[in-house]
Image (cartoon, rainbow, N blue to C red; front, side, top):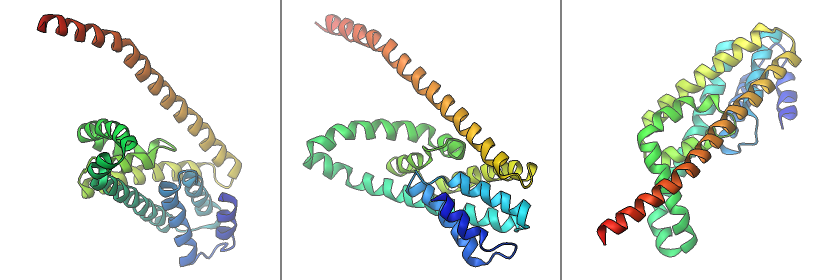
Length: 219
């Protein structure tokens, strides 16, 4: 997928047209709709084209940011659609009723911390789309989700561009840096998840003992 996009972009050489910027934007949007699409690699390649081919950095950043906003909005709309049908599906489908309890927890977390998650979304690979779906399920205000999502995208894209321009024409160095960052980000995410699971397992006996005490006191 990335190789095909790179081929389309490279064909423009030093004189990109509207089609090339549309391709950049759609690639950035697809990352949110089809998470396996590595949108960051496309942004990095755009940074490489700025340094190697003289493409306009303003137009490249605008294209990928608008694409990201489109993908975010699609995810948010899907979350709102799920939220609208949640009560109906719980009444009709027992399996969804069990899944609904997870949605309740998502709603509670995002109602309190949703803005922070959205602001950090671009710095966490692979899970970005889930944040915007969750924001829709939690019915956060769309304008707030979009504003913080775009701010996060601009900061991340600026970071990627700084890396891309710093290494000049060395494509291998650009993508090597991104690979290292992705591994580090996944490592941090794994540590957070493990810490949360350990904390949950540690507190479960305490909650059970508290429930038993409450039962005895009530009896």
